[in-house]
Amino acid sequence: MVGFEIGDVPFNPDGWGPPESTDSSVPILPNHPLNVPFAPFSRSDKLGRIADWTRSNPNRPNNNNNRSNDSAFDFTTDDSFGGALNADEDSTFRLVDGKPPPRPKFGPKWRFQNNRNQLPQRRDEEVEAKKREAEKQRARRDRLYHANRSGGNNPRREAAVFKSSVDIQPEWNMLDQIPFSTFTKLSYSVADPEDLLICGSLEAYDKTYDRITPKNERRLERFKNRNFFKVTTTDDPIIRRLANEDQATVFATDSILSTLMCAPRSVYSWDIVIQRVGNKLFFDKRDGSQLDLLSVNETSQEPLPEAKDDINSAHSLSVEAAYINQNFSQQVLVRDGNKVTFDEPNPFASEGEEVASVGYRYRRWKLDNDTNLVVRCEVQSYMDVNNQKSFLTLNALNEFDPKYSGVDWRRKLDTQRGAVLATELKNNANKIAKWTAQAILASADMMKLGYVTRVHPRDHFNHVILAVVGYKPREFAGQINLNTSNMWGIVKSIVDLCMKLNEGKYVLVKDPQKPQVRIYEVPADAFENDYVEEPLPEDEQVQPPVENAADENGAKDEVEAKEVKAEA
Image (cartoon, rainbow, N blue to C red):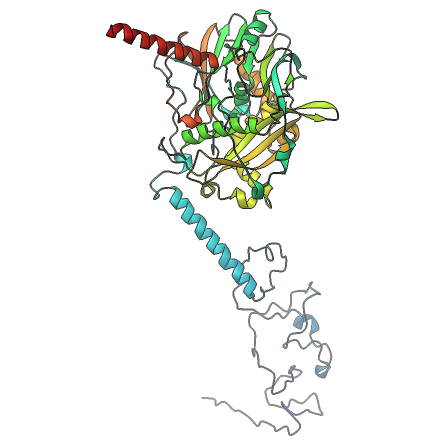
């Protein structure tokens, strides 16, 4: 067995490492190869690997000239080893880092950094405080969400069960169903309309309401003596007269037409009665229809209470929103008795009756060579701009409970009005789009949006006005992504479809669960006297016309007279 000889280790009195040899051809140690580089080091240097077996192949050509040469194992720049000995091979050496790669940072400082080898700096106390605050806000939103779900047993908004706006009878014949996906692809351009007649009277807008802020809010007044009319198309005497004069072939009101135009944004069910009489087409609404009310949080993801008697249920909020909208439209006017009158007085008011400030513009659009459309459009006020009268539409957004929207109007309206409007556009996309469409149909120069909130979240009778903001309808339509060409494309497609139907009565119903509408053929006597509206609270009831009140008094007198005769 051959032994292992260590050999003599020479002593170097001048420093570390083997002593220098005068003859480079004779090795210092036996069986030691010549010209092996040795890295000199001091006592303070840390020793690395003796040999790195993971280094790249030294025979492979090196194309990377930008690699760092500061490694302690790089001997190419040391002149004590005969210059750049095997420089091409040693330049390919790379220290292997065994540490795991840093986790990606999704904050704003690390999202778009290209240098992946850079380690994140140490977080300071401010960053940690912001992180803790964000966690608190997330936890708070989760608590509010679970509280609104009433213990978590209610389904999410996507799975909520909505009821149809009208009971589908078994004898009705479904003719067609149209998905909303086909509506979004439609486009049609129409020429500017012409005014056939303007009725009613208007009061001027009070500009002092533009300066209202949450700090100097105003109480919302009640106008019980002013009457508001929600008359359908075929009950309008002006439209009947225009139909007899063959002024058009299709007739509708702005509320009905805007419902069609904004149908793809709707979530709740609605219905429109269509009557084909001869070569004419009438778009009507039922008595007590949902079109007379205003939806609240229709497009929100947060579910509303399902109990109908709850003040925050969908039905209660719709009645409250209609009540607020009517009173707001009359409060922001200059009520000094000076009114602007038009060609004819209000066609629905009796003589001596106090009516709300409203102007009816009967306008005609040419859809094609054979089809003309007449629409009754409404404006609520006017302003004098450069000695010219500009028409206004007045509508009010209402806040019922900040917990549902997550935005407190009293705190945010002054500093973050854009955020408040963005939240309303998310939660009430259909309602705001319909208001914008009605303003465009009426060619209103300005649409005023009021921000009205409850005095207390549990008090749905008393409200305050926090702010009033004005927008130009067409510019606002662009902001909310409301395409007028698409609106008219929907109307044109529905009109062309209904013109192919036979004479009779039909109903267009929005499916309560799916984004689509259905057309049913119904009997001629449908919707005559079968709808009974639930009685509303006295404070929310719209005052009836004077003639109706007189009829009621006459009926009471007759009953009393019969009772007296019976006693006799």
